[in-house]
Image 1 (cartoon, rainbow, N blue to C red):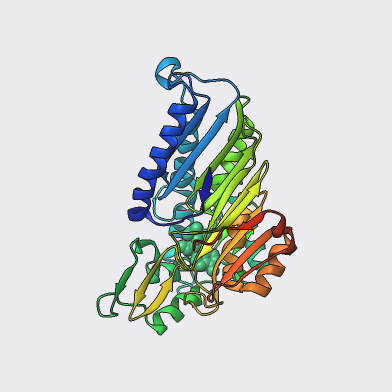
Image 2 (tube, rainbow, N blue to C red; image 1 turned 90 degrees about the vertical axis):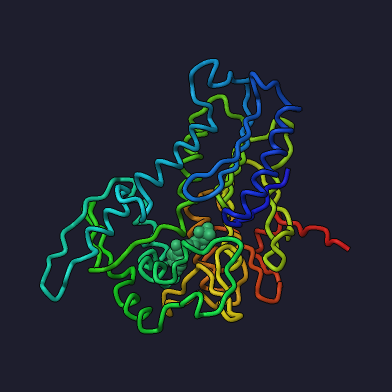
Length: 375
Ligand code: ADP
Ligand code: MG
């Protein structure tokens, strides 16, 4: 089965979800007994994205109704839900990230407000430390302090089908508003030490660029603790995890969307064992205003959607956080610098530029095959 890296947003996704759901259900009905399945399939939403799961078991499990335990697919959905609610959402007021932002929202440096330290959970400390490292390595192209600029653009409200409108109907932020928000951002102004964090006043963190990757890492830890799981392929939006083996011994096939024509596949990654694949593209969330496309990946230098000539970039690593962070960073850096960054982390990357030209790291060639072109 091909797993297309489509990050279409919810309107469109629900159509494809219905389709995928149908395919998975048929596969399950034909491949296993319904009462004691050996293959678990599920398509659901969590963390504002579609989570598609296929889990191959060594021994059939009874359904929840029969033995009272939650199925692995349900446990995984629960994990992703709590990750968002308790940790990484900037919207849900009780999430740790939202509380950090809130704590620094109305500090007034002119009035001499002291920047208190906000304590971090061990998990958040690790996430933020890793984010700051990627900022450093990418020369600030990747920067989670971009939150207030991203809110100004309203990227979270952009839904599929993309809005195409005039500026009168879809007002864009002004140069001076962007400047003002940019002045409060910048990863160099963040201090993480002694298990606490200090932000500069008015700064707002956004973990949108790594949320799905972090979710995949949590899912991977969960799967590793499950004796009965032989293999799994799980996608969270456009980030995909492959794990273990398929009972028939064949490889995992992960499709990459053609960004020039997003209902088609550019090609397939053939993978064995544990991998994480993330794609960042200008087609995922955007609006078109007066013929200009504004997408959701912001260049921290300008405060505007990145103009690096990259249309999409796919990153392949063993680690979810890294694949997600690097795909965003590589998109902003562009092909040459992005390729260098990926290689520095031992990751493979595939770039498609505005003309549809494809470039990839040397190592990517052993996994990627172009799709046969339709005549
Ligand atoms: P998606 O969220 O569609 O998977 P990405 O992983 O590329 O796509 O992340 C894009 C999201 O990351 C944006 O919606 C925004 O929340 C955040 N973001 C935008 N620009 C940056 C940036 N330069 N550095 C870090 N995060 C960013
Ligand atoms: Mg990303």
